[in-house]
Each structure stands twice: as structure tokens, then as C-alpha cells.
Amino acid sequence: MFILCIVGNIFYSTTYKKIKVDITKPVDIDIFVDMNEEEANIKSEFLKEADVLDWKQRARFVIYKDTLTVLKEPQNFIIYPLFYYNCVEFAADEMQGEIKLNKEDLKEFIEIVYPVAKEYCRFEMSQKVKEFLELKDEELKLKVLFDTYKKGICAQIKYTDGSTDLDIEKAGLKRDLVKELKIAYIFTAYGFERNQKKQYILEDEEKIFNFVTNGLSTLMNIADVYYSETFKSFKIKKKTKFNVKVSLNHASIEFWLSAEDIPQDEVPDVLASLEEKKKYHRLKDGTILLLDDPELEKIQNIVKDLDILKKDLKKGKAVFSKFHAIYLSEVLEKSNIGVSRDDAFDIYVQRMKNVEDTSVEIPKHISKLLREYQKVGVRWLSHLYLNGFGGILADDMGLGKTLQVLSFISACKDKIAGPCLVVAPTSLVYNWQQEAQKFTPDLKTVVVDGTPDKRSEIIQRIKDFDIVITSYTLLKRDVDLYKDIEFSVCIVDEAQHIKNPQSLSKESVSRINAKCCFALTGTPIENNLSELWSIFDFVLPGYLGTHTRFSERFEKPIVKQNDENALMLLQKMISPFVLRRLKKDVLLELPEKIETNLEVNMTPEQENV
Image (cartoon, rainbow, N blue to C red; front, side, top):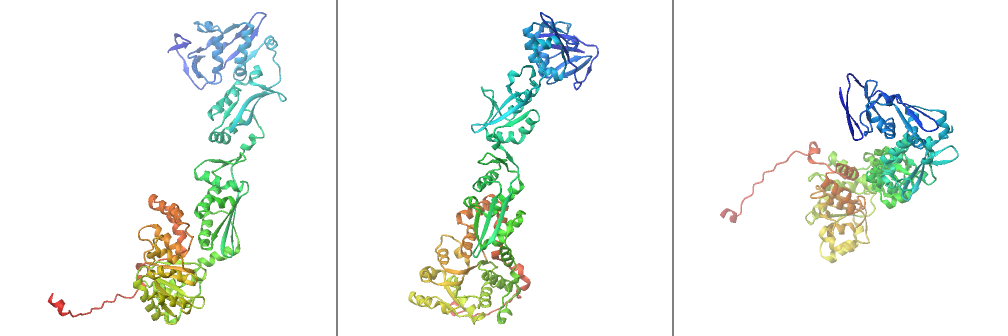
């Protein structure tokens, strides 16, 4: 085998008859140091027999004892100083295996070679050498001191004998260069920079987090690690415990959220960091909070789903209307997190969910006319009214929404205190009156129409009636006359008339003072989701938030981003308050199709055409 060897800038070639290749085989390097009065003598069988092929590379190839192998770190650090102190001998064709040094060079040689060779070679020194070098038996240990530095951290490497700390340069032959190098590698890998004071500095917050969570434990396997009191603020918290409580008051639901080990005013910032997909959040006291905690993600989902404001998070308390009871309960159940719920809240939620438990007695003369799905609608309207909620009856056109409303008013007549107001398109006002007279003749009905004076006179006597009917057009003119009247129920028919949040029709019906509001429409959404918000703002004011917030939270994500999560969230919110049946859903309950043929004679004028 022909091999080209490189020593410094000198090239020479050697031919080997037979060698083995084993780059994993450990290399046995022997070094013996002795001295006399004049000079030191360094002998090594390895240096005599081995051919070092590439001096300049960290992993140096050597042929030793007929085997080609690799000198890996840290053994390869020993080779270069040997060559440096006697390069002429090493460049010769035959390795002499011996280096002669004066006493001063010996000290320098030992300082460089000994810290590594004592661990990774067979290194021996005569007693004369030990006495000359004044070697002592005490051990020195490496230690790393951490402290804060401006907005970051700093580290210093020291040696200690147990009572005194020494700079690494003053440790002399007791230095452990291998460990020093490993520590330096760790600091470099995690982004530390060394300043003129020989401190390792790290100021980037992301890199500090990475080092504290990953690099620090590796460093502890190499040296003793000590922290200053201020550095201890960089402690890592992997988990945090949240407390969630829900309680029902007379008119609202109180939602409490707090963390056992996070200051309340910092909770919004922690969740904001999680929303930004950060791996950690640094608290004001310096604690690094890891954000891969599943419970933290559950809390974030609850906060997002309930749309809790930052100011409420800082206080640890959010207040919801009773409208939110079912939705809030479902969000908490989905989160699968421990929640403290008072009995009043649970009882209320169960009562809200169980529409079928609502007991209403529909008058017999009406009940025998109603189909089963219409009875369900009457019970649903009654359920919402008796619990103080409004809703949208969104049945398909022709399924009898008017009849269901009239049946509901008749069934709950004893529980309804005060008149019910029906607002309808002008073309349907008298249809409502006719339907009421036909199906609920026991209810006193009046239409607000005629001249302004006549309408004013009717409105003054409004408490004498059970059902008051007016049109959108006349309501806009007369709305001020209704300001001091409290209605039990306000019903808007063909609710698409209030689909524009800025329209006068929407403004007028919103000014009506009513305990409960219902909207009837076969098309709750015609063009955009803002129409749904506008109708809901009438039946359940504030339930879907402000128009701007609704647009940010639902409309834009659903329409522009096809966000299925936002769509599912909206559906979950509105489902308890919307009842919609299509003709195909109740087809078996509908009457047979009736066809009637009528013959009409043409007038003379038509015959002449």
C-alpha cells in the first residue's frame, strides 16, 4: 500500500507491504518524562513506531503496529505539541521516539500535554520531574458560576480546592483541558460569547430559554454548577395549576379563573405567548414557564371559546349573561378540565337543556289543529319564554310559524303579564289579525293603524289587549309612543327586515321594551353572517358580542378563511336559540296536496283582445 504523508509543508511517501484498517481501534500512546541536571528527556514507543499521516487534521490518521487507525479527540491534541517540540526528529525517515527539551520548554510542554495525557495516555514522570514541577497531591475541581448580566446571563469557569477558587490559567498542571473544552463547546453551541473579562455572556431571551431547559443539565454532568441569588430567578416551571369556578347569581353567571403560581395580572400575557406559538413565557420574577403544558392549552381554549377579555383575565373574573349558560357548560365539558360549579348553575343548565320537560297546556281547540312538529315549536317557544330567553323560529315557509306563535301565547296566557307586540310587514298585518281571530278568539287583538291621532289613541289603551299588531313602517313613525310601555313579548315577523344592523327597522324594534323577543324568518341568513348577528342582537342583545367583535371572531374567519372551528363554535352558540325545520324534515306530517280547478269567464274586453 502506497501512502502519502504530510508533515507541516513537507511531503513524503512510504510503501507498506501489509496493513489492517480499523478506525475504531483505540490507540495506546505511551509517554515517559525524565530529566537530569541539564535537560529533560521524553520517550515514547508510540512516537518511535507510529507514522502520523496528517498533522493538521483534528482526527489524525496513524499507522501503528501494522494497523491504520484514527486518533480521535482528545488523544489527537497530544500529537501536535510532540511534533512542535521536536519537528526535525519527527520529519526524519526513522522516528527516534525521543525528545530532548531544556527545563523551561519542559514546563511549557507539560502544561500543554499533561492535563490530557494523564487521562488518555500511559503518562509517567520520574520523581525528579515531579520535584522540579513542584506537583502536589491535592485535587482541583471544575466549577461553573452563573449570574445575571444586564438583561441576560453570564458564566465563569473556575477551579476550586474546596476552599479557594482559582482562575483556570492559575490551575497549572491540575487543569482538565478536556472538560474545559467540553464546557466551551456547550457555551458556543448555545450562543454564548466570551468577553474581555473571560465571562461567557448570553443575552438573547430565546437562547437563554434553550440553554436553561436543555444545556444546563448537560453542563451539570461535566462540572459543579453554582448560581447567584439573582440567577435563581431563571428557574423553570413545567406545569401550572389553574382553578376554574362557575356560579349562578340572580341575573348573571360569574366565571372565575386563577393560577396557583402565576400572578393574576400576568395570566393574559402567558396566554398571549401561547397564542403566538412560543415555547415558553418568562414571568416578571424571571421564572421561565414552559408552554407545552396540556392544561394550559385547555385554559387557552376556554378563554378563546368564551371570548374572555384581557381586562377580565387580569381581574380573574368574567361575568356572562344567563343566555350563555348552556354554551358555557358545553365549553367547560369539552375542555375536560376540573371545574368547580355551584348547584344553582348545574340545575339551571339542566333545566335549559330539557325543553321536553317544559309543561304547557295548549288549549284543546288549538291542539287538535296542530301537527306534532308544531307542538314541539309551541313547547320550545314556551320553554325559552319561561326561562327569560328569546330565540329565532326559522321554519321553512309554509310550516305555520304564525300559528305556533299564537298557540304559544294562548298556552302561556296565564304566565304572560302584559301585552304581546307583533311587528310584521304591512302586507301581513291583517293576516295576523285574521289568524288570531280564527285560532285564538279568546285573545284580545288590535291593529295599530290609521291616522297618527288614531294610532296614538290605540297605543294609550294598549294594556287592554293581549296582542298588538303593527307594521315596520308605522313602528318607525310611532316608536317614541312606545317608550314607556313594557311588553311581555315582542315578535318580529319576516325578520329579514331587521337584517341590516344600521337600518331604521332594526333600530326601532331594538328600542321596544320587552321581557322576551322572538324573530320569525324562513331565511335567517340571505347574504352574509352580519344578518344573523343583527337578528340575534334583537332577540338576545349582547349574546354574540358587538358587531365588530362578531366580525373578527366569526364572520371573517368563516367567510374568508373557511375556518371550520369558528363555524362549529358559532353553531354551538346559537343552536339552543334557533329552531329550524325544513319541509323535507316534516314531510310525513304535512297534509296531502290539494288541487282546485276554477273556471273564470273572460270579460268582453278580454274576449276582444
